[in-house]
Amino acid sequence: MKVVDGQRSAYRPPAPSPMSLRRGPVLVTAAFAGLGGALIPAAAVPALWRIWQLYAMLFGAVALVEVVAVVAVLGWPTRTTARFGALTAFAALVLWVLSRPLGLLVRLDPWQPADTVVGFTDYVAAVLQVIALFGFLFARRRGARPWPSAVRRVSAWIVLFPVLLLVIATGAAGTVAAGDGIRGTGASALLDGGTVEYCRPAGVPLAMDLRRPAGSGPAPVVLFLHGGGLLFGNRKPSGPGALLAGTRPDELAARGFAVASIDYRLAPAARWPAPLDDARCAVRFLEANAAALAIDPARIGVWGTGAGGTLASLVALTPGTHIRAAAALAAPADFTDLRGVDTLTRASVLLALGRAPATLRSASPLTYPAAGAPPFLVAGGRKSAEFAEHLRQAGVPVTTSPDVAAFFTTALLSRTP
Image 1 (cartoon, rainbow, N blue to C red):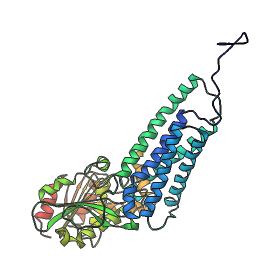
Image 2 (cartoon, rainbow, N blue to C red; image 1 turned 45 degrees about the vertical axis):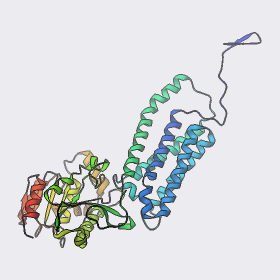
Image 3 (cartoon, one colour; image 1 turned 180 degrees about the vertical axis):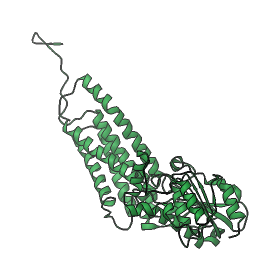
Image 4 (cartoon, rainbow, N blue to C red; image 1 turned 90 degrees about the vertical axis):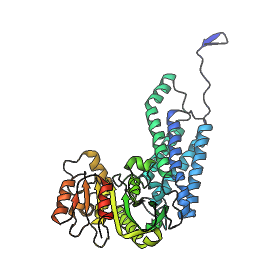
């Protein structure tokens, strides 16, 4: 209370400036959404730089401007800075629409480096940009309204705080995934070990890590295909890709094998049969460069877990592919019949492969002729028993023991091709 001309009146705080905004939950959530949406493509800029510098500069510039806008909004929350934030989010969304859904940018897919670990990282960035755009516009529209009561402010924070945490976590996860993409994949170099480029579909280099055993002479080689439902994972034995896909290819190196572990294009950024095409391209690369890599092209095996096991089976069943042994662990063998499949698995199949019967059939090893296929290890996975029987009926040697090292030792080291 205060006294004015002898009269008591209730104290009222000064009205906010018409241009000022409160750092309320909507504005803060929009700012962190914009920050996450900017950092995701920014994390992939180093990889994009090695592909085409023009796109790297374009995406880097858009991300930098949006980061500046977010800092401005949080540091000086006004209607002007909120409009600046909304415009940068809108510009980033337009760039995404032109490059991903419409595919109008020429030469290559600039989002592919960001989608190397998680196939829909760019969609995550787009969703964050939508949240930022509408959040900034909403905060700007309400900016000139009177300050709400303390109870209403606290209630708003309680309601929106979980959303803010989700936005922050999503942006951080997307940034880590985008930054773990094809770093280290420089110019093609045929080395005894390290990372090489094995294929360049649509102008985007795909990476292969090659580990050679100790000793000299051509070594048998096993191509490892990571799992992850065709949506997640990468070639690396550590990092987010390994957490998502359980990559453990190093065990074979101690047995005298060279191990080649690859990245392949993931859904929904790439549609089927892109992952299978990439796996086949990796086999051709190993065969064509066997002498330089000091590997034996007559002793190539393929191994995969989960969806990688499905790809391994399909590669081994491809006519004309000189695979000497194939191991499929916990690998689905048939996508044409999804009766009894849980909702999450059904949704992942829909996202990765779609609904077209021809596509589902082409991704199902159980539907392929098996005559002339190499020895198989089949352990776990939906309809794996039916697939193993399908192979046996075609005269293919099959083992169901999950001991991959023992299987390849017998098939590639002891067996004469």
